[in-house]
Structures are given as structure tokens and as C-alpha cells.
Image (cartoon, rainbow, N blue to C red):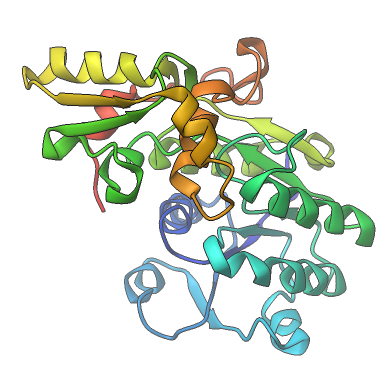
Length: 288
């Protein structure tokens, strides 16, 4: 049985909030003692506090602020994203100083184990920093969020609008996992498995392995709605992806050529009874 009972989640946004909500369910069931939210603002988490979370305002530029907030915490889960990723390094240093036993970096997406390009490189470097300071880590490779990705204008895959632009052929296999299922998996393994299972390793989670074209086909069959689909030639995507600021093209290339988080026998091994929802189910149940 795991000795992890006290958890702190940095951020309460796109993936942080579902994880916090799942931890609070575990707390209500007596499996977890403390659920701490590390936040920059005192507002926006009142509903989670009402359910039993502790909201602590922290200054990521202040080691003492972070260390104080992490006192008595067993596991830190970082859900910081985008420009906020720069705060993950001081958070890791503070976690080490505070005696935290495990750090879960903000890796919820593709497998960064052997990648150094784009955002993968930033995340890989931060994970290397955790190893350097001697703080055990485990990251969750989940693929893109199966519910969320289809509602983001910047990605061009907006199914609800009826118009979808696919970068490349759309035939590459992709690991897609809903935020709800990611949260379920994270909380389940961290509250049931022994600490020895988390020593500096990737935990590969998969809701469904399917191509973008497969999702679009399933959606149309399921809903009876016809989508207007256009394709950007793969050679054009490759050229655009050379621009480090073109995140959409970079992601499109990943989905086309390197979209899964591992071999099929490597995913969901820490929870064989995991029963994730399909991508189309996740799309239809999406909540902002």
C-alpha cells in the first residue's frame, strides 16, 4: 500500500482542476489526508476549498514561500503549462528542500523520454534537473487531451464548428486520453501503488489509440453530422514546423509521425482494470 497521503497540485487549470477534483473524491473516501492547491491568486478555487482542498497562495520567485507551502507534502503534481513552465524548476528545488518524496512534472501529453525538440525539450531538461537534485520523479505520458483538443481554435481541429483542418494525412496513430480519465489514472496509482513503482519512470496512459481520420469518421457516424474536412500537405507541415514559434504545425507533425506514447503493451500497465472512455465519448461530454 502506498504511503502517499498528502498531495499538492500546482495549478488548477485545464488538467490541474480535474486532478484536484479526483483527489478530493479520494479524500472524501478516506484515501487521502490533504489536498493542497498551489496558486498565484486567492480567487478561483473557492469551490474546491468548499470540498476540502487547502488553497495556498505562493510566490514562485520566493523559495521560502514555496517551501512553507510544501511542508508535510508527500507528492507534488505540477500542472503548470505554457510560459508558466519556467516556475517548475524553483518548485522542484523547493520540494526537495521541503522533504517531498515524489515530484510529478507537467508532462501530460507526449512521451518526452527520447525527445528534445519544441516543448518536449523544455520538459526533458526540467526532468533532468529533478534527477540532478536527487528528487524522485514520475511523469504521465497521456497524449493530447481527447476531450479538449477538438475545441481549440488554434489547433484547427474544431469539430463543433463543422470545419476541420487536418495537418498532414491524418492517418498517423495517436494516443488520446480525456482529462477525466487522466485524473482518474493519476489519483488511482498514486494512492494504491507502493513508492517503489514511481522511481524516475514514465507512466504511459492511453484512452484510445486511433488516427485523426479515425476520430473524424467515428464522430460523423455517431452523430450523423457531416464535417467539412481539408488537409494541409505533409511537406508543407514539415516546412512550417521548422519555425520554433509555430506550435500548431509542430503538434500536427507529432500527431502525424510520433503520436503514441509507447507500444500497446506498455500503456495502462499500472492499472489493468482501467476502463477509459472513447475519444468520441470524450468529445461529446466535453466541459470547458
